[in-house]
Length: 176
Ligand SMILES: [Zn+2]
Ligand SMILES: [Zn+2]
Image (cartoon, rainbow, N blue to C red):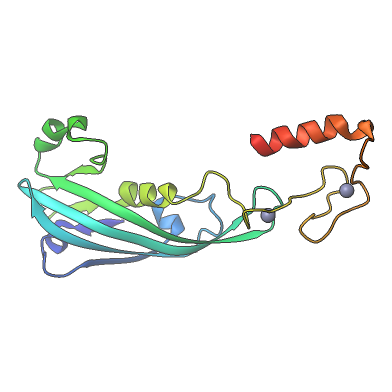
C-alpha cells in the first residue's frame, strides 16, 4: 500500500486505509481476501512525521490442534516514524527497541510504502499457537476423531502400557 506524501502531511485528518490481507503480501493467513482496515494519526516529530494507530481485521484461521476454524479479532498497534533523507541512519537502532518502524520520507510528490509496518502489526497480533479455544483437545492421532466432539474408542485404559509410547509422543507434540 502506497500513500502519497502529500496525504500524510495533512496532519489534521487521520489516515484511513481499507484493504485485504493479500495487499500486505500475505497469502498464508486464512483467506487472502479478508478485509483489513488501518487508522493512523500523523503528528510532526524530529523533523519528520510520526504515524500511530491500529490495524484491525477479523481473521478466520485454522486451529493448530484440531484443524477446525478459529476466529481471531486483530487489533494491532502501528507505530512508524517517517524521517527526512539521511536521518534514518542516524536514528538507527540506537533509538530503542520500539523504533523498528523507521521509514525514509520520500521527496515531495513521492509516496510512502506502509506495507512492512502493517505486516509487522498483524504478525505481532498472532498468538504463538493458534488454538480454537484454550483447552482444545485436538484430534486422536490414531483414528482422527475430533476429541472436542467426544472421545473415541482408542482412549487408553489405565495401566495399559501399550499406549505409553503414544501418550509420550502426544505430550511431546503438545509441548512443541
Ligand atoms: Zn481446536
Ligand atoms: Zn481414536
